[in-house]
Image 1 (tube, rainbow, N blue to C red):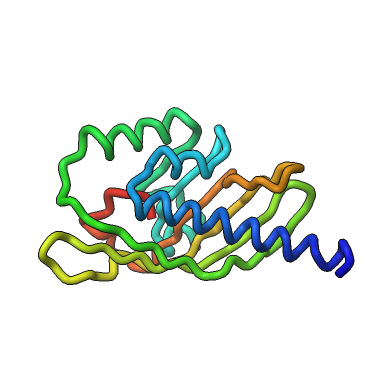
Image 2: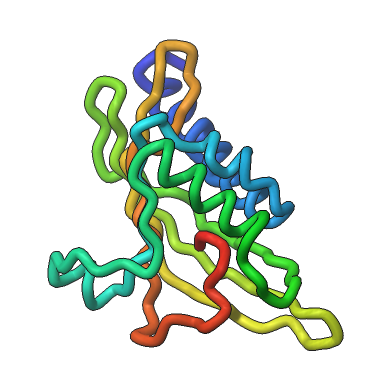
Length: 163
């Protein structure tokens, strides 16, 4: 295979690995690893589809920069009181929308399930991730921006963790 064929394939595999690392960190409750999936000035939003499509700023969760990520991790880990749950993220294969230099714009669908003790597993949310990813020369990738666009007009009352 030539370099022209391998480069998109390598980029796609690396992007898939980043998506799986993101999902694993949340499913395992490893919020430090979740935070590590982002650049230091990264942005994360959980936003309803209607607001996203209209360009409205309202989001259920917003982390903009390292300090806000650390605050979110602290609140989830130490302060918030909520029923313990198990999460399971199912992330579709990413679609690269554009790639220019170190910046990749991509999209992937997600389904997130949660299980509360002594209850059956239930669907928590479905939607898509709208991503801007930075790749360095070593092939490592981090999210510069991830917007989790959830499809439902209703915010689940159990939205504690990022989607």
